[in-house]
Amino acid sequence: MEPVPIRLGTLRTTVKPSSNVSASPVLSEGPVVNNASMARVCRVCTTQEARYTCPRCNTPYCSVDCYRSHGEGCTEQFFESHVRSEMTLASNAKGNDDEKQQRSIQELLERVREFQEEQQQLADGEDDEEALVQRMQELALLDKEGRLTLDCLTPEERRKFLGEVADGRLGKLVELWTPWWLMSERKYRNETSARRRELVLEEIGGENDEGENESEASSAVLLEPSVLYPVRIFTTNVAQKMPKSMSALLPDGRQPSPCLRYHLVEILFAYALVLRAFNGDCAQDTAEAAFMLLDLCRVLSDDARYQSLEHVCLSCLEKQSSEGSATNALAIQDVQQIIRTDVFLLDALSDTRALLERYQQELVRNSESDKQARRERKTALKKLTAIQKKIIFYQTWAYLTPIEEFQALATEIEAYTKNKELLRLKIL
Image (tube, rainbow, N blue to C red; front, top):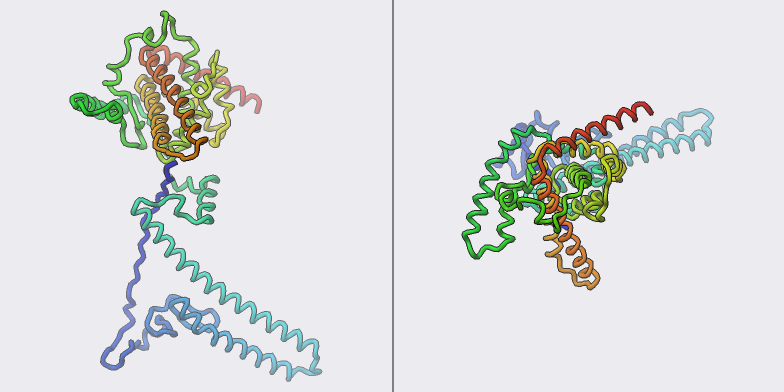
């Protein structure tokens, strides 16, 4: 499993010299501070600018060390002054009541304790601040080097980070991804047409090289991850390799089942929901994204069958996901948007296939020494190979099917979701 990247900004700290501090090497070895700047210079070390003030004795100081150097004297003076005050009051009190005198001493000791706790909290707070600055600088350096992952965090930092992700606080700082299928068809075609032509040229150039294998040629159709576009798109070169009819995939002259359209709805539903869950970037955890896709799509993982649109839509809306039922309903609307346009439909299936291929490659690279783990990896690779064949079948069928049939299916989905919404409003 690849490390999860964490994005942080660069932390910079600067210390500006005080314009009120001057040193004279002629008169003495140490620095000399003029009277006008005494209020801004640390009274303990007399060399640094005072950033803090003791709340008890009003002594300016610059750091924890200087505070601790003056702290004992400050506490002793405070204690001595209060003891003398209490002794004077006690001696002047008429009746010289022992009970009142003991109560006064107890109150004095309580005030001393509160003062000491106050000073300790102040010192601890400054320690925490300096430690936080140092820690943020360390994390910023790791981020700059590209080595910042969850493993770099302490258990407490990881717990807080994951907690903020879970309750949505961190999500407010992250820009939400806009699905590429929400773009207009014309804009999407214009934005991707040049890349499609470049990919075709890369593949043609690769075919002239006899030493290039099939895996290297297939890698030419991969795009860099983007917030707008899928990782893999359906290129003109891929279209040229498509069969002319479904007879090449269906033996004995059989025709595609009319239920394929309902199965396609679940495949696209799972794809849209996974991308929304990962904010458009499944590369941050390819294995988890693939697991989620196959868990949501029983057509691919369990060979499920749906006999009607209502059947598949109810199944999709009832699926358990970390994103909640509202996101499930939104993913149904995404399906409706994707199948209205042939380029959206073919690119979504190409991107689904690319996600599972990347997961396959991760499994191949893993070299477990445990015999049971190797057996499970072999079984998983075999299952993924069968799933890839299914996706190729659906992609070929979608390419050969007139777009008008999918547009009619989108209209049916729209009518179904509106009826469900009206029914829900009547119940409420």
